[in-house]
Image 1 (spheres, rainbow, N blue to C red):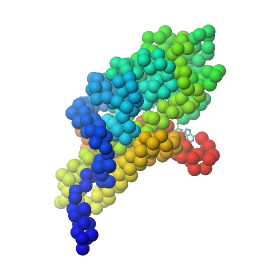
Image 2: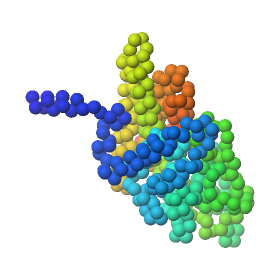
Image 3: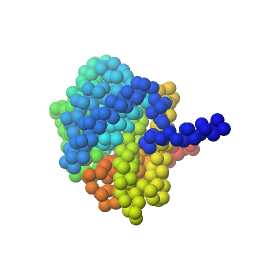
Image 4: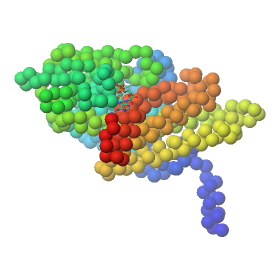
Length: 398
Ligand SMILES: Cc1cc2nc3c(=O)[nH]c(=O)nc-3n(C[C@H](O)[C@H](O)[C@H](O)COP(=O)(O)OP(=O)(O)OC[C@H]3O[C@@H](n4cnc5c(N)ncnc54)[C@H](O)[C@@H]3O)c2cc1C
C-alpha cells in the first residue's frame, strides 16, 4: 500500500517537458549556475535580436563582449583568464547558446574549441601569452581553416601547403566554408608540409593573406562564414604550432568542438518543442486544442523521446570526458545522434505549425535551416556513421 501511494505521489509531480529525466537534478550547484546564467543571457540579449540578425544575414557581433564577460570563450581551459569549467558545464553553455541560435554556439565553438584549445594544447608559451587572454576577452577573434574547396570530408588530401624557406614558411592555398573568416583577427591554418600536416597561426594583415565572405546562405545566416586565401604568405617558424604533427592536430580540435555540438543540438530542439507545446495548446481545430489530438501527441512524445535520449547521451559523454576516458567514436555517435534528432524535431515542429511554420515569427524554421549546416559541418552525418562503423568492425570504409 505504501509503495502504491509512493507511485501515485511520484506520478502526480509535474515533470519539466524539456527535461523529462530531470538532468538538472543530477547537476552540481556550479553546473546549474553556469546553465542559468547563460540561459539568462540568451533570454534577455539573444532572443530579442536573433530573428532579425538571421533575416539580415548578420553576425550579431555586439554580443561578443557579453559572451566574454560571462566567461564563455575558452571556458574549459585553465589559466589565461579562462574559467577552467568541467565538460558538463561547457556542454550546458553550448546547449543554452544553441537554444538561442546555432550561429552563437558556432561562434563560441570555433573560438574556444578550434582556436583557443589548439593554442593552449599545442602552442608555445609565447603563443599562449600572445593570444589566449585576448581571445578569452573577445578582443581577438579566431577562425579555423581546415576545409578546402575540393572536399572537406577528406582533409588528409589537403592541397594547401607550406614550404620551408630559411627560418620561415611560405604558405599557399585556399580554405572554404570557414566560420568567422570575415571577422577573424587570427586564423589557424592547417597545411601540408614535407614533414606532414602542420598548424600555422596567421594574423589578419599578413601580406598575401586575404578573406572573403560567403553571401546568400540559407542556413546559419547569423554567422559569418567565408573563405581564406594564402598567396605566398611568409610565416615565421615561431607562428607554427610546435606541439602537434599530422592530422591528429585538427582532428583533436574537432573532437572538442563536436562534443559541444552534441550538447548544442539539444538546445535547438528544446527551443522548437517549447514553442510548439504553447502553440498546440491554443490552436483550436475540430473543436479541440491541437494538443488534445492523438496524432499530435504522438509526435510531441516522439520529440520528447529524442530530446531525452540526447540529453542522457550528452551527459554521459561529458562524464566520460571529465574522466579522461572519452573516445572519438563516442563523440561521433553523439554528434550524429543528437544533430539528427534536433533536425527531425525542428522539421516536425515546422510542419505542425502549419503555414505559420514558414514564418520568421516562429523559431523552428530558423533552427531547421541552421541545423542543415550543423549536420554537415564538423564531419557530415555519413562521416560520423563511418567512424562508428570502423569502431564496430575495425575496418575503415571511408
Ligand atoms: C556554415 C558552415 C560553416 C563551416 N565552418 C567551418 C570551419 O570553421 N572550418 C572548417 O575547416 N570547415 C568548416 N565548414 C566545412 C565543413 O566542415 C564541411 O562542409 C564538411 O566537412 C563537408 O565537406 P564538404 O562540404 O567539402 O563536402 P564533401 O566532403 O564534398 O561531401 C559531400 C557529400 O559526400 C559525402 N561523403 C564524403 N565522403 C564520403 C564517403 N567516404 N562515403 C560516403 N559519403 C561520403 C558527405 O557525407 C556529403 O554528403 C563549415 C561548413 C558550413 C556549411
